[in-house]
Image (spheres, chains in turn purple, red):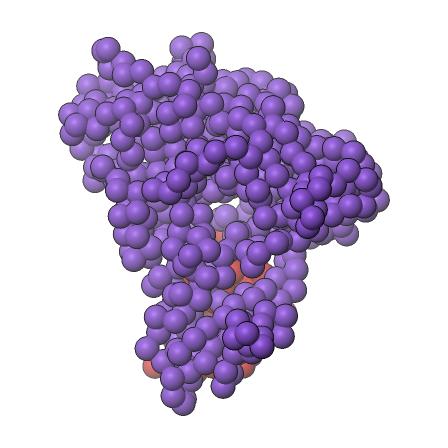
Length: 466
Length: 86
């Protein structure tokens, strides 16, 4: 049986004195985090948390948060990462939606660390089909939705990625993504699978390209994984190159298409490093990948991996098989989620909503979305969630959002119809959004209109809007 | 209220370059980071403005410390600290 929690536990016995996590407070060995994880498991067990339960983690990315994840998994429970920066109303929505038994914050962690650090006896047994974690992502109904991943799904991805990237105990991975984004699953568990170290980028520098490059150099990072926007800024604004980062041997990216010219500059800056494009919505973890050689066109999302099967389905329901055919990408296999929390279970293949083109048989390129879901600098945003938040303003009758530009220049534009003049200012709407939405969903531009464009049958006309 | 020249120039920069000219509700205590006015791209614009237009050099770690970038008041304080050293 393959459990996600086995990865850390196995390395904790084989590599006890090696560093597992480097965070703002210093370096933490496998042994130290293992002991903390046992304390957390005992503290939660004392509160009645057990197999099948869900526990929130409201801590900054840190060794402490990692210990909580492992402690929760050891009870056979699933963890739900909550961002400490999320505004309270959004966090509360998620705590309610997920019906969390318990949320670990700094105070709860302090209390837990007074418990004994011996392993639980007997250890509760999880099975491969039990949930390991739930990641909340932007929802098309206006509220965030919880993507449920089981141990088997998480392991199918991690085990594949460790083999494909060739992670060993001397690697040093960087963690740039927040723990509620699925990119962080690779950073943490690929490191733990191999007995390697993961170096967590401190929050204060995560938006500052120069300091990110300095961080990677200082920690001798060998494997970097982030959204293309962050990488492109590091190359273009901070001179990231093989010269500045001689240890960096593999650069992984996911979350959005890497603009062709920017990718060519990354290739030039790192002539010898492996460049890997990972693809997959949170609902399927990573389901395809492509290794970038010379950059001579738009980078494809590539072919299936992790034991998954992928295929494209055209408008008429037929499979796309010839070069150039376009259709919606479907995914079947171990990495597909168990379903959204509180909704019907996912049965059979998952329709991604992503439109792809057949590059050659079995190899696909992303061409767009079937629905309104948007990407802004690698962040997935459902317009309905932003629009619902904007419409809660007392002087907004209705609102519609769209993205202008692409890549680093992408801007989230909100059109609002005010109840009365004067309409709210851009800053007023930003402040209003900041109380309800994560930062990446805050509008960049505001357009005030007397009414929203409608189609003949009264629906919002998105083409005229943009 | 901050009325000095450094503050005025920074205010004008934020209003014009980061808020598309809509300066309504902007003051020295507007939370620029928390409200997403200063994102990675805007931070790069701001640092270029401080270095090229105000002609003030600030060590990178301090310039990009989020505690110094929270509001126009904190940015002004940081800039003034180094303005005196020219």
